[in-house]
Length: 111
Figure (tube, rainbow, N blue to C red):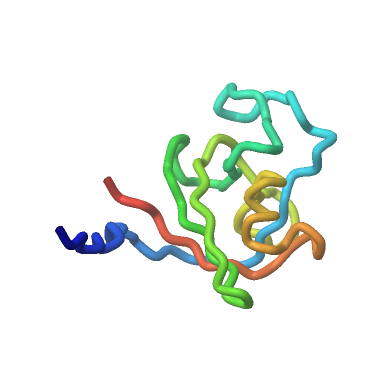
């Protein structure tokens, strides 16, 4: 019997404004986020100024094409021209951890 490969599921994405991303430092591990959750640098989470808590975002580094899906659980960033703060794990997934920040494209994952 031949096995037919399954196509990867198509994500329902709604692009939104991107810009510069930074990441939280590990020194904030355990601190309460605006949603009440404790910050976990190894979780795939982020801070965004206005999106509702629980919103899932696809974050793409246009330089290398790497993407990660994160969940909004905090508010910010409130400094500079940054549009999103990523957890350490999310920043590492897309390759901006070493540089400290980087330009990203954002899209909301719709159910």
